Image (spheres, rainbow, N blue to C red):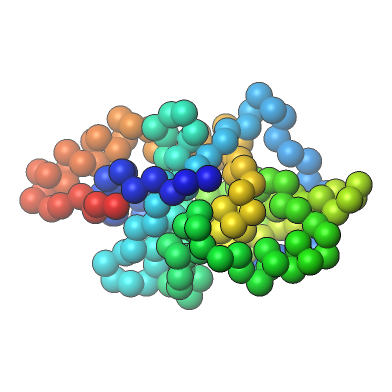
Length: 178
């Protein structure tokens, strides 16, 4: 999975712990949307960053606000060539593999994503924060999904991004470059 750096987005438009085993089922295949990491936009105030995911094969975006305390080293951890973190190494050491990550909500809360693992014939699902789960998926080379519902509720279409760029230009600002 590669992180694309060709996306230009006005930052202000985008701001409008693993625990236990979950029994949530994956969204039906037709309702699932595969995502890729487009980049990370630091907020000027430094209080947060925005993790931008892009619908694979399309230009629709899913922005996720990552609070400052959780965004340290996020850009580094999301690089495809980044060294695996402790969690990824632990999963591997225990004979497990990250099968996929599903973003359940655009909120950064502890249940905002589900990490699906395999360990031999055993299948596990763990809730986690979206940014941490995405970083784990990138580290493991696992796909990232969300539902069409999440994209409809929280995503941005290319038209919405264009309108935001126009608004920034009218107000004399500069769109954030990635």
